Amino acid sequence: MEGLSASEQREFQSRMERKQMKEFMGMFSNLVTHCFDSCVDNFTTKSLVQRETDCVSRCVQKFMAGSERIGQRFQEQQAQMMNQSPTGR
Image 1 (tube, one colour):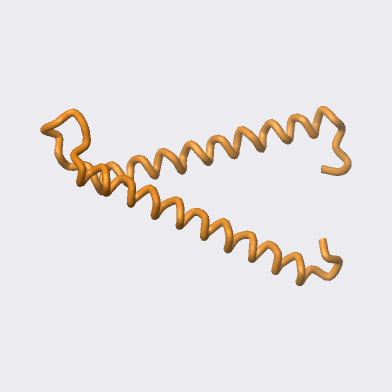
Image 2: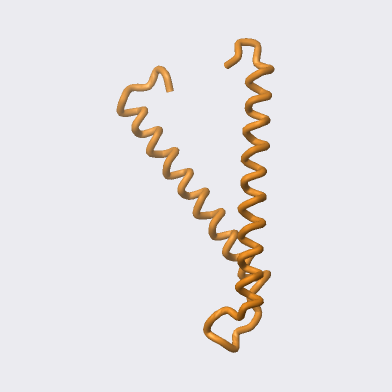
């Protein structure tokens, strides 16, 4: 962000925050849709039955574990790229 004025830096930061929020909301929406479609099939009661609750919990846990692993791999790849860079930047 070198070379940007203070107002340009604030605008850039604001745009990045909005983009991150939009991506997070999209990911959350996909998670809800996937877990609901995979786990909920009994519409005879207004609340989830125990089997559905357990399924949703497992689904969310797997999704979070997968997301965490992907984040770790991304960080590993970034570190590797930084180490291969001729200037270390």
